[in-house]
Image 1 (cartoon, rainbow over the protein chains, first blue to last red):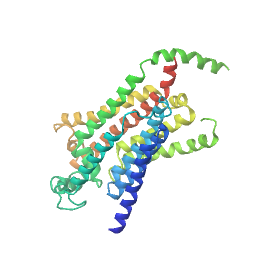
Image 2 (cartoon, rainbow over the protein chains, first blue to last red):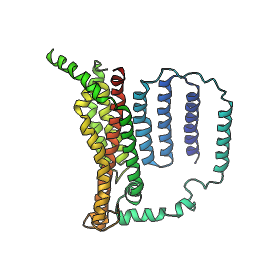
Image 3 (cartoon, one colour):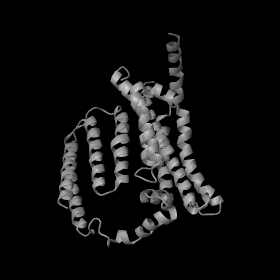
Image 4 (spheres, helix red, strand yellow):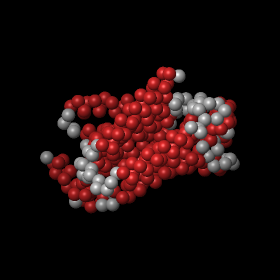
Length: 192
Length: 142
């Protein structure tokens, strides 16, 4: 119990310091790197909650690929963020109020891992039993994701597909023009 | 970046193990942590690493854009196709029980195919996004 508390306190301290550093930094590349580090600590946080699948996703998507995509997109941004002219008082105040409300509400949540919590009584026992008997797959997360909640995952896949196609449609508008320019260049290189 | 020998050689050494690990995560998702989303990202990262080190044009020779776009759509088609096949067999959309000889093997086949669809779409969307961002500069200059 004490060790769990220490680990959580350690992770939360790192997350807080990364968040403060994120507010302070004005260089875009540091922002990207710090966001990646934040995702990695969040992945560790999920491991302490025994959510290995979520931790895996957070580490590979949040810390891995999104950092690369941010870096690729960063090339088109100015190197430094402009100093904001407007006052930072109202955003800070609203963040503090929202955070306070969330902390206040969290006292009404059941304890983590408590068996009598409503979330563990509703449909979860059926899934845990059914995953073994009806589907025969040891990883309950996979059976919920792909079988019980197959519609949702279908929707997620289509969302990823749509997002990709939308970005391609926006960025590849002038592709034929580019092809005409780059083809003669390659020919020259081949001859040489 | 393609003049640095350390990057070149370590990329060549790492490329195959990354893809192998991606396939492991993809097809072992029933038994351990993992699945289509994670595996797709891991496989995509191998191709992106290759493009980063050897240049975007070499990366496109390894994995041509038209194949990338076909596979991108194929993932969603596989997922939806499994649902439609299960409908044609007389069950509900995306109910896998009738796909195999027994309900359990049907579920196994269904989940495997569905995860494959997810993995294909996710990895190809990531590669396509990276290629789009990386080649955008040339387009803008013109």
